[in-house]
Image 1 (cartoon, helix red, strand yellow):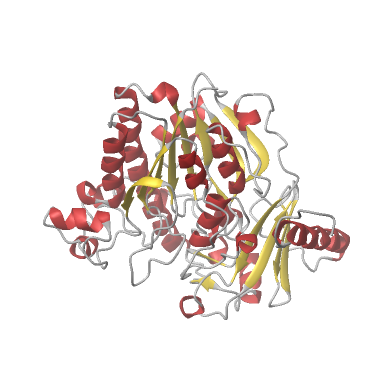
Image 2 (cartoon, rainbow, N blue to C red):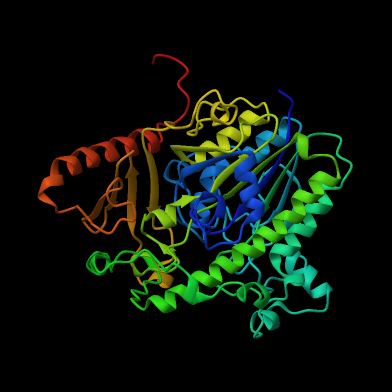
Length: 465
């Protein structure tokens, strides 16, 4: 197989059910819809942590966050092993570029330190703020060069002008990269900050969505008791709002941010077409984790594992090489994305890698109806307790083709949902007498999964003794 270019577009905090072609009639995503129609959408893709750094560290390394020993936002350093997948791909002969966020180590009160990442193009923008020193944050420097202030724009009634928005800046930089005279295959990793909070889209996009017309969150009265039970488990913040009109406003603003993403994504794909590179470029659209968006009375993220927070878009497109208009409904993890990237670029998947390639599904050798028997997600002291009001929670999620089990290990609490009958997780079966046998089986399966997949057994065995 020809070694294709890779255009890997990763949004921040975008939940799975925000794509028009996959069933959301309220969003405006015609460009991403076209990818679904010409490619493969994995409709049950799960991140390995609902928090930025551990999730990104996981899919950039091929290991679960706890196996990598990198489970927190705000971490000072990054492990020396294993090599990042971008480093492996660069060593195989690819030119690798990074535009936007990386966030494998803390960018708080400092510029994010470079790792041995393999990127020869590094145009960094952790977040659309201008509180980093000049010369350390490419987007903020670009805004200053236009004679603008991000802080002033963010605080204006119209918020940031679309012409100076981080999403537009990332598109400009991506187009510059694509239009270069490439002498080798390339991988471009574009990481925009939207639709991450704060929910402040430009007025132009906010006006496209009437809050009153929004469907509203997945919320029932039964959620109140569950969230009260989990009130001491980390979250930022727990709103417990039952005012649906207020949550619809948040939903409208979130969808507005996604509409802007779609418009800017179109510019990048047009650049591929105009430079004649579309036929030899794999396009990937995904996100690092989701957003609760009012579901269960919660907004933003934390130590929970609801579908809107841990299930993300994952779409691949390569016309003429991948099957078209295919929805693969089997369970997958973002670790499988990173294994697939290695496979696509002709790299052997290392023995330690915990993902599995999705290439057989993409090429039509497998249907994608059954991929993994289960998926798992972790939250191990991931957010600073100062910002959550908690104490540093520890929890895991285990999901099979029917049930989802969430264990809050430091609180002796849990949730159990039958996703066949309760897909939006309103009826917690943890204490239900009829589900105690199933619960115990799932606890054992979750424990076994954790031990087998995250235990560090030490260095490579070289002899029997």
